[in-house]
Image (cartoon, rainbow, N blue to C red; front, side, top):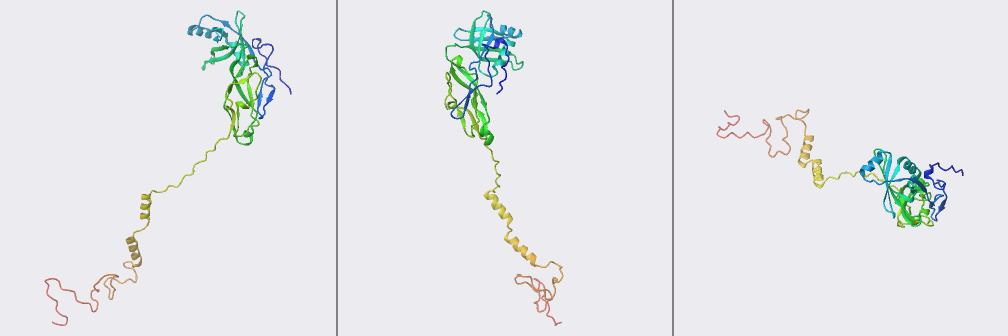
Length: 318
C-alpha cells in the first residue's frame, strides 16, 4: 500500500519528528470490532508562549487588539497568565484537527510545561480566539482525559437491513500516562447488524489505558427507524338519538302511506270514463256511511222539508 508523505507542520508544532498518520495499524477484537491505535500513540505539539503580569478585561482586550490571545494554565505549579500569538495558535489547532494532543508550552525563560487543551473560547461573530485554558499534566502521573470517537466502515445493518448508525458517545474518557495517550479511538462497525450496539466493554483493551466510562454504556448502535402507519379514518357512527331520528324520517307514516295508496287508486277529477258528479246511477263514495243517493235518482226518497216550511204536496194531486 502506498503511504503518502507526512504532513508538513511548522517546526514549533513538531517534536522528535513524530506525526500522526491516518494509515495506522489496527487491533481486532473478538467480536469483530476494531480499535485503532495510531502509529504514534502520543501526539505531542509545541507552542511558544509569553508570561504576563496584568490580568483583567482591560489588558485582555488590548492583547486581542494587538493580535494576541490571553491564556491561563492551571496545575500543581499554580496559576500562570500567558499570552499566545494568534497565528501560531491557529497552526496548532490545524495540527490537532479534532484529536487529543499534548501541548508542550515554553515561555521566554525557556521553562517547558506539559499540558492539555482544556477549553477554547471563540468569538462567534468574528471567529477570533478569545481565551485559552490549559491544564498542566505530569509525565509520570496518570491523567483522566476524554478521547474523541471516530466510526469507520459500512455497517451490515445499514447496507442490508435498513438500519441507521447512531453514535451515542462522541468521546470516551480514559485514564493513562501521557506517553500512552491515544489521539483518537476508531470503532469499525462493518459487522454491526440492525438492532445491535457496541458497548464500552466491547472495545479491545489497550495496555496502559483504562476506560473510565461504564462498561455497559453504548458507544455506537445500529437502529431500525420505526415506520409510522397512517391511521385509517373510521366511518362516523351516528348517536342513538340521531339514528332513531334518521330512521323515523326515512320511513313514511302509516296515514301518509294509506293516503298515497288511495290517491293512486282513485281516478282523477274530469278523467275520461270517470262518472260525473250527480250522474244517474252514480255509485256512492266508497266507505261513505249512509250516503244519500244522487238527486233525481229513481226510487230515492224525497228530501226532508226544512224546519217551519209547508210540507210539499204529494205528486199527482192538485
